[in-house]
Length: 529
Image 1 (spheres, rainbow, N blue to C red):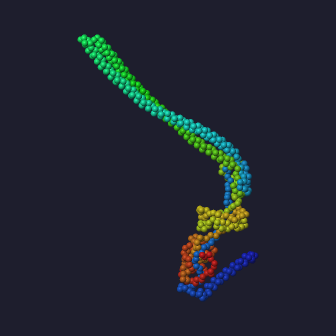
Image 2 (image 1 turned 180 degrees about the vertical axis):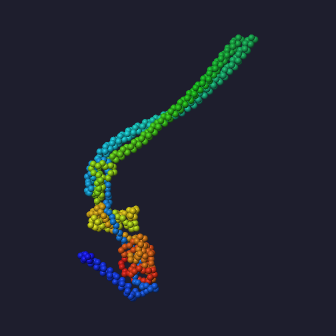
Image 3 (image 1 turned 90 degrees about the horizontal axis):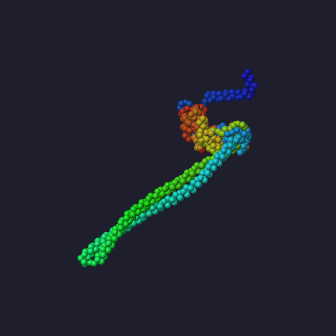
């Protein structure tokens, strides 16, 4: 029954017959090899009695390999803009829908401007009040400056006059003392003269009295006339009157001395009092000058107050500008040419500050975001050429170049994201499309390589393998650590040196020390440098 079904499907039946033929041919060939007698070079045997099999060998050499990476990626817009509410309020107009094309500067949304407009009027009023206070302080400060300046000038002049008055009072005091001393000296001199005249008058009186008494005695003796006696008597009376006069002069002179001393003392005290009064007046004028200078300090305080008010004016101006911007922000425009990719709110919804309303994607430039392994990211720089296939465009291939690469690795995938720009003059590639990215990378310097077939017993996890190294036509098993591979060659990181001969093809597994017949591989063009 099964054979009948297979005959009903001729293609499958023919394929099964072909597979069976190949299988029996291979079995027959292996049987032939097992029972046929080796001859020629292949009949040689080793000391252990085994045959010397022919093998194909090649030489480990340094080459610069180019590895082709095939990565998947997504097309993204180079500019994805969220249109957010910059002013809170109900949405009055929403002029576009999802998918609509937009131009840069096109009005997209209008938010109710009532609250921002009222805030703008309030800020204008605040600015006017602040400016009025500022100008008022300026006028008061100017008046204070004039008053303080004139007050200082007057107080300074008064102080100079008071100082001159003190100096004058000191001079008057000195002159008064000098004059008083001179007057006292003069009256004392007159007193001394009066006393001298008194003593002379007393001497003259005594002389006249003695002469009179002598003349009176002579008269009694008859030697002097009465006229002589009368003359001496008048002379004595005259001298007595002179004594009284000089005594009066002495008393007058003594009184003059007392009066002069009293007047000098009085004048000195008065002059000293004038000095004290002038000094007190000077102190008063110093205080007046200090008070006038304090007026300057008051003026400086006004200046500081004006500066503070000026800062308030600037702040009010800034608030007004902010209010104007807030009113402008009730109209939202597109910052780019593109299309609306998302619409989150509708007309009538209340938008809060910072609420996203629309999403606009730039339609002029897109890029493909893909990822590269960490071991090759250092070999891919900006401008590295790539080929990008877009599945959504029936596999159309676009040329591109690496635009940027992230500096930080993705901890989940252990890969770096890169962005690729495309040569898409017709803007066929749209954000959201699926892309396949192909690029060739290679090491900066040639690396030691062997053909892929030289590696046996490969450990894919540890990246280790065994290589049959040929030394004097015998096999040496070499453990190697390998790196990346292309279609033909594999990079050897450790275990071989340049120039080592390795087996790349044999009829079966080889053993350590086994004798072999090495046959060089056919020469092929390579990237050896």
